[in-house]
Length: 69
Image 1: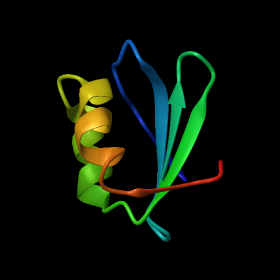
Image 2 (image 1 turned 90 degrees about the vertical axis):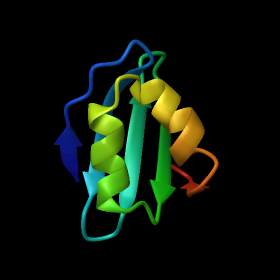
Image 3 (image 1 turned 60 degrees about the horizontal axis):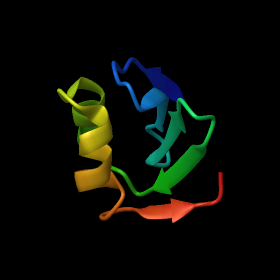
């Protein structure tokens, strides 16, 4: 997995696996969430969004399957 830089009050870091489309999100409160089937464009868009936390809530959480981290 590749770490993508993110500037967010909610999200500490995000990691994306190009080979399997998995997106791991590590929140500042220590929680982690893992999603599968995420296109690379979505992961990159989240990383550069003005509010990555809002992008996560609006685009990632409702549209991609969460799997056990």
